[in-house]
Image (cartoon, rainbow, N blue to C red):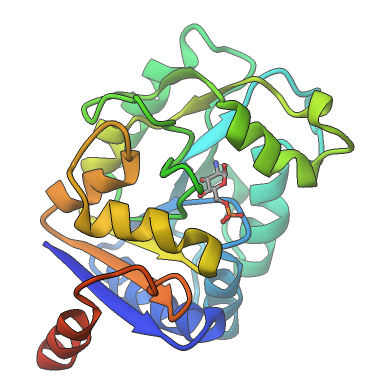
Length: 250
Ligand code: GLP
């Protein structure tokens, strides 16, 4: 089932997310965290870093990686993950994997195998694109998809151009965990902030489960939590129900 938590702002969401992540990491001696890039998870990483946990044994797998960037490019997700997640949290870089952009032929299947060999992902953090993508699973992606090479939509390339010098510099392809891969994580935690995410959050949480809104796949997951700020929650029809349910189970 999907639990929806509506909080005041991204800071409060970061604290709530850190609490859930800490609890999930405490369930196994060598826990596995599914990490996401993008601006949305930043307050969660900051809140987690403030807790000064010993995270040296945590394994982590990123959702996705661009193809076609020079190795070490500052906007490659490997570089972003190292800069924004590994260093601030004190993770062991050797235990943190991103899809292998150097091997688009065999890399995707090997990534699936590595996740399975680590015992599966305990908690997968997710952001959501304005078009409903999770990872880089664009609208039209199968809800059973595996890690694979995929094309970025024009909309996503335009949204992500802010991280690059120009639209032309944004890669056109990527390797992304599939929606089927994401659904195999034991818990999902999707975060979204801001009015510009309100329509897609409502579609993902309350709309039809459909390849047209890849994030709607969370509705099929037995243990999914969505944390949104008031602005991102503004399109939800059942927000009073979510608030009451959360108080009931807290
Ligand atoms: C990118 C990433 C997604 C992320 C999305 C939203 O395209 N591949 O994993 O969720 O952007 O980004 P933001 O959190 O910056 O809104």
